[in-house]
Amino acid sequence: MAIQPIDLQALFSQLDKVGKNQAVLREGLQIQEGLQQVQVQKKLEENIQSVNETQDMGEDAGKIRDEGKGQGAYAGQGGARDNDDEKDDSSAADKSDLIRDPALGRNIDISG
Image (cartoon, rainbow, N blue to C red; front, side, top):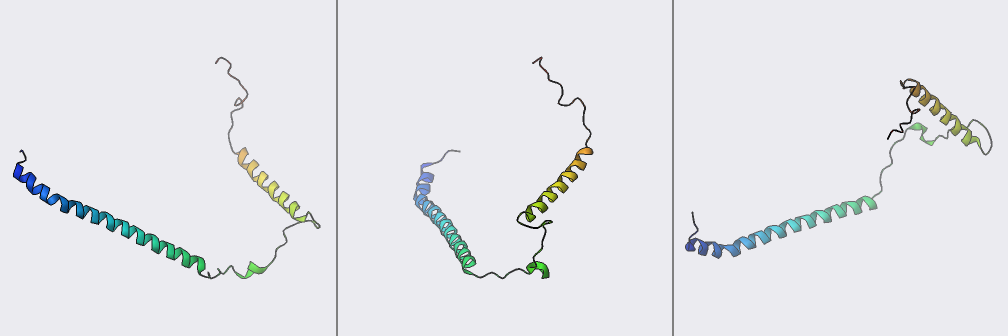
């Protein structure tokens, strides 16, 4: 089915209207995106300027706990070392549960 010259004449007369409609749609999308960005910016500014309510942390929030075992300047470090030893003990128990090949990592293949 071929296009007749009269059909082309009708299409060309409507072409400017189609272009205007497309331009209006694009501008509308850009305006909507701009409005959304402005709203997001306003919300961020309000969050920055507002005073947030503190969270209730319970009755023990104000208490100071002494976790160090020794006294003096190095008291906190002693407790930290003890915690590391406990972690090592638990990881050693996990390692003993694994089944290992006795030849794994002992043979070198030089045949290349």
